[in-house]
Length: 426
View (tube, one colour):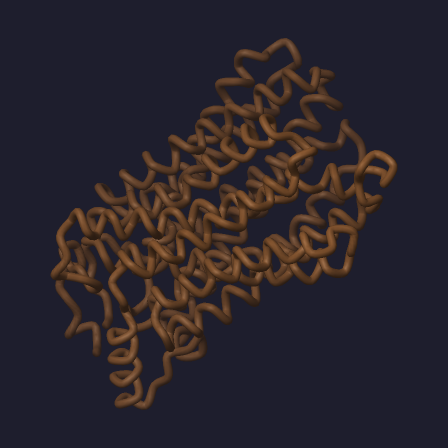
């Protein structure tokens, strides 16, 4: 359908399960949330197993080198990129619900595979690549499902809740690891593998099936001589929009990682703080981020999807403030860290925003590639940024680069369309 045939406003439109009650829809959201939380939690697996993998065999470990251990989890991150593409295409054929169930099962099984031979480096690499491949499909499948089950006034907030679970997963993972320790690393692996399988069952029983809707969209596209794939999605004005959102995501990944990966090192090596002080300052960022995701999600639902660009610009300002402080300014560092975490939550509503930017028939494709496509940019960009500083004295160059990238990202965002209460193609 053309834009002229689209709904004049998308605010009250429930595409999937319109006959369901609000209680049923929120139960379905809870089921998706289970899968999404343990998707985030699975990224913490390195925290659980790395100490045991790198410990000497005499000490009960497996004797992997630090380089080997790092490569195991680096290949997992790389696997998310093809996973995003493949599962996006799968969801456009069998529906997002069935795809999400498939993904959840794959996450559980691939997480368990290394337990068959935990001393086998190749098995770890293959299993973690497969795990990353599965993880890459979650964002682009779960968020559009939520978007289609709820009116627009809820979408930014619900997408933000999903996104904020990454911060909760970090807190949960740290607490669990602190309680169980290295001796129970296998138990910790089970905590990352079994819950997604339970989540798959919950999704199966509570989430409305979009298979028929998906087939109808494919038939309508075929009647227009169109196929539902990435080539069709990136046509006309949507090519520029697609490039814009991938750049926006990539700038977010680069700027955030450039700051986050080097903050504690700068505090310790550059300013001479203790590990405990640096860690305490950094931890406040996670708390601020958890709050920020949800507040910016509320703002995006109330005032517009582009308003949180203010938060991205403020990140540049706060990184600048971070650089102006000295070792005696511990209390101020804590405030800046918490505020920076809060502002980093600007991306909370991106799942809903990225879905709404493209026609409804591309809902299964748009969010995942728009978000995870940015990982390609950061994959090549981050090593370049890291190479700018070789000593603690030159580390401010990294933070200044992060400032510039945050600012550039906010400018890109301003040129993207607003979607709140705006027409959307079918």
